[in-house]
Amino acid sequence: MTHDSNLRCDAIWRNARLATMASPLIDDGVIACRDGLIIYAGDAQNVPAFDAVETIECNRRWITPGLIDCHTHLIHAGNRAGEFAQRLAGASYEEIARAGGGIVSTMKATRAASESDLVASALPRLDVLISEGVTTIEVKSGYGLSLEDESKMLRAARRLEDERGIAVRTTFLGAHALPPEFIGDADGYIDEICNRMIPAIAAAGLADAVDGFCETIGFSPVQIERVFVAAKAHGLPVKLHAEQLSNNNGAALAGRYGALSADHLEYLDDNGIAAMRAAGTVAVLLPGAYYFTRETKPPPIVALRASGVPMAVATDCNPGTSPLTSILLAMNMAATMFRMTVEECLAGVTRNAALALGLSSEVGTLEVGKRCDLAIWDIDELAELVYRIGANPLYSRVRMGRE
Image (cartoon, rainbow, N blue to C red; front, top):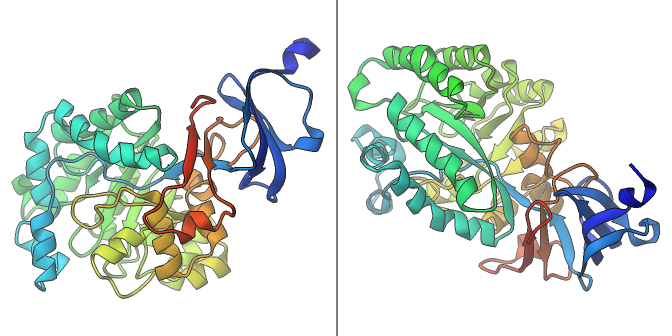
């Protein structure tokens, strides 16, 4: 490659303040990209003399990495507004679930919907997240609870990437709830997941990871461990809904299997924290669900911080316990209810969110070689992204070097 071709770039953003999430803040920064990847992100004083096809003047706006929502249930049919009213009248989430509501009620609506119906219903939710600078999103299945319907959900999730300029990671969450055809036979359903569903979904390339719901109204650690073994046998990393309603030692199990993340974690204990720390498992915090279910026990942020466990923040967008489509509000909630710092919240939707998806080599920071996914903000200081409620200061969103 010649020297001149080395200095060619497709676009360059000048006169910007950079929060690279990999180095100290840069007051006068420049980003250059070629073929959708960052080839320079740094101080204006050291920038090479690029031959740019397009130069964008940022007028001292802030640039962060494109935001990442690393835990969503975006694909589903119907809503559970009626259950929300029940909870307001005093019913608990567990009582509603045991009475046939909860996840199983969404399962019925999702099974009845076509793949195209699911895509169409998800797009408005996705568009709100995109409007707030989200460039990468994780989408779980878990409302089909059969091979056919879980596969339909995962195909619909994959289609979101074609419908919109966004990177989608799909997670198979067959171990979310017990479907009606397996009532009274949870072990039989786990057999179905391990022996039929995971092999078929892995062979079809529909999932990037496997998740489970380890809880008193979900599945036991012994059952989840069987799911993890099957996932690993088919080359799929694992994640876990853990310690949301009680301490079932799910986080410790997740750590033993090198899980990408353990999520929720309100009832996480020291053993779980130690296991996560040893494994490099990310703590994904979901303040929307904490708020919406009126939980009173926050996750142990101080202990997680002290142990150096990476903390991510996500919307947990789902119809039953977190109908939240604002990643900015999720950050505000994490700060106000969990007492996370501004830096922790920003890292939680960029660098650590990428780590929770196994994507830290591709996105999450503004560094050479990573995708040129940017969020450009009309703000004076970064704290505004966490501080404001109901405001969206996004000026421009860039995906793979293109607005």
